[in-house]
Length: 222
Image (tube, rainbow, N blue to C red):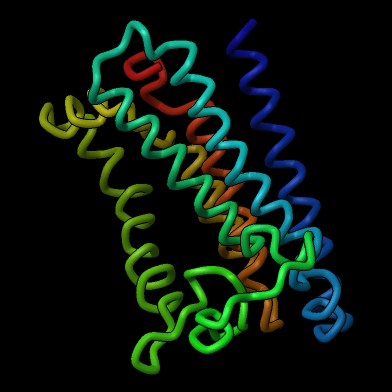
């Protein structure tokens, strides 16, 4: 019964993403400007869904920490708490920590050093270079690629990798999740609009929720 529920959640998430991508591709073909200024606009539906997906991962991890933590070792608690903090940070950064929602003005530091004059770290400019490009695009992109491709293989081949991930409660993606993520990424790349990467970020958030909700090593870590 639990397995069927998890599978149903996965199918619904994939269907949701497919519908959003189809709509996005159609809008971008008909009117790329509308795609940029409305469909994938700042603080719009797509960006809010990204923040929601990241927040769901954080909440899921905190629930596991409180439900299972008493019977788990310290390293497991540290790992689960760390992932909750990372994804909560990502959700907050995505919406600039509610700055526009609550109409909060940026401080002097962010006005002078943030590319969009917003209260977030990923748009900071250091020595003329955007932190977003160096850390959140290049470095983070490399980590995600390795996590989705090399790590699942190493998890089965290396006892060191497996034991490390189990000890820290880190989930391993299932191959169908990786394949779907790649397919949606390829769909997104067909869009000829500047803000198409907002769709990628939303896909990342939703697929990673599924990875954490129903990982390959669920029985080992949760």
